[in-house]
Length: 282
Image: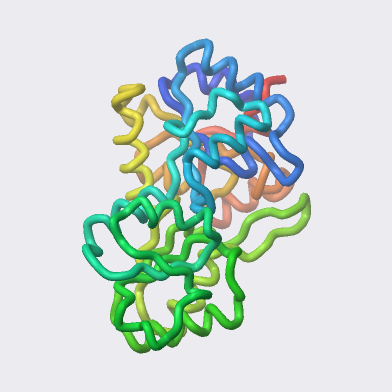
């Protein structure tokens, strides 16, 4: 496994897509040296965007959190979230009625921007089931896992309605050595129990990369071979970028431990174009 420096790689591309957690930040905050990298890219007019499965907050709120941490060049238009795809799907497919969601009030931003009534699962009664036209898994917080997941299960036994997963991640890091269950894993459980097939948005699905590719064209016109995908996870960031035809960078600053990276690539068959310790400038 050949480990390279990130900046000489990035200089070969017009646009860079960055995953957020494990690439730009970790459980301690912004990774040291990332701010200098972003400034360098900005000075050379290399477009950069945050391509994230985080649907817990709006693009504005996500951008503000980066700006408070010192990454002032990350503005709302540079956030491409899986929640945006979920909203787009619902805008075309659900024309009336109520959308029930699992998540925080902040995550409901993507739904409330539609001309639809929304209700958190925790506030919904099963007697209202005939009013519900779709269910959306937005975030793993903001509800009682036992009571409200059971409510979703019984709602879906009563109604044959679309179920949208706005964040397909199964886990997320909470410390250097620990992860927590993410909403994608909760959705998998309910999907298995109901025998249904849910709609998933986010990496590694092609829709996420198509959406991102189209999003950047007005600002930074680029062909696929001029776009670089940077992530810390083989089975979302890297395989998704590979399948879409982008060059990819696996960084070892997040989910993929440096001592296990080569073994993981061999066992999965997922191979990035490049491997870097991190994107931080040295």
